[in-house]
Amino acid sequence: MSQRDYYEVLGVSRDASIDDLKKAYRRLAMKFHPDRNPDDESAQDRFKEVKQAYEVLKDDEKRAAYDRFGHDAVNGQAGGFGGAGGAGFGDINDIFGDIFGDIFGGGRRRGGRARANRGHDLRYTLEVDLEEAVQGVTREIRVPGIGKCSSCSGSGSTSGKMKVCSTCGGAGQVRMQQGIFSVQQTCPTCGGSGREISDPCNVCDGSGQVRETRTLQVKVPPGVDDGDRIRLSGEGGAGAQGGSAGDLYVDIQVRPHKIFQRDGDQLYAEIPISITTAILGGQIKVPTLDGSVNLKIPSETQTGRTFRLKGKGVQSVRSNRPGDLMVRVVVETPVNLTREQKDLLKQLQKTLQDGDDSKHSPKSRSWTDSVKDFFDRMGL
Figure 1 (tube, helix red, strand yellow):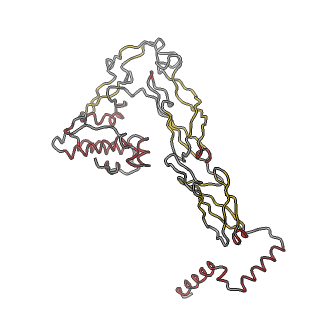
Figure 2 (cartoon, rainbow, N blue to C red):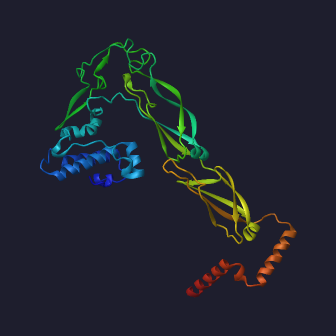
Figure 3 (tube, helix red, strand yellow):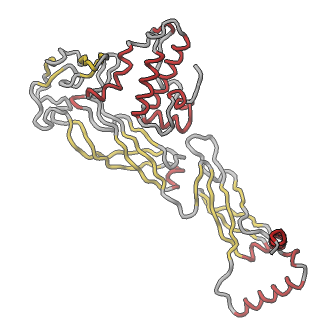
């Protein structure tokens, strides 16, 4: 299958909302579904392509990975598709289960297994210093949310006894009619479990959930960057009536650093040097994330010159070698000079002016010539 851009496949912009995605998918799925095009193999291929694009973009985590890394980040994750002739495509009404679920207030089920009772995913923003992001750190966080009721072990029942759901007869699903579409949805009474609680727990009122604040250990791997996300499986909100817990997503936020700025694997630093060091040359100590190093400054160094320190940058979680540290020097003008120091500078100034000025200040001379040419062209 052609690896076209998923947004292009659905005909939507990259900032399209979930509603825009649903509308585009519904329109294209109806157009290319194999049941409507039994003898058109190209339509079947287009249907596969449309379904794969929608499966990725409707999922926040897969969409974020796709936006950042393209097809390599999601290949093999969008789910399998059936073979030719429409096999494995499912009933055409089932295509819209997740779309019309918003109308009926339920979620689509796959393979007969209810997902309605799964706990909510949670997000937590963790601030770390640059050094912690580069070297890795284990941090303790406190996460408020919904946990499993200890009184009923999350079942929602005091005795643990359940009865067959009177609405769906234990199937966990009911069929709803919306216009020409017949959509199978999660049972609103039992939430897809197929069972009802006969004696609800008096602590959680039968939900199997209670509010709690948990303390968790988060292992931040070396090389993470601002905006990276760590997934803690099963550490989200507890599921209702014994359902599985959601996941906790820890978003990394790196605090600004006083010395370094980071761009991917590269580090950047701006370091002031004295005017005498710039003129005569010398050595300065440059801080790095693993200690200081000596940097040789050649004579006649101009402000803004950048030096590269190889391997002194960051080794991100996505690379196998560290980047470089780029040091930009800035010549600092001395202040609070004594009379003697000012007299010495005046003597230096006089010796420079007595000779060929362009010899000592080639950039200044070049700039002056450019200004003169500009005024001549303007007739000023």
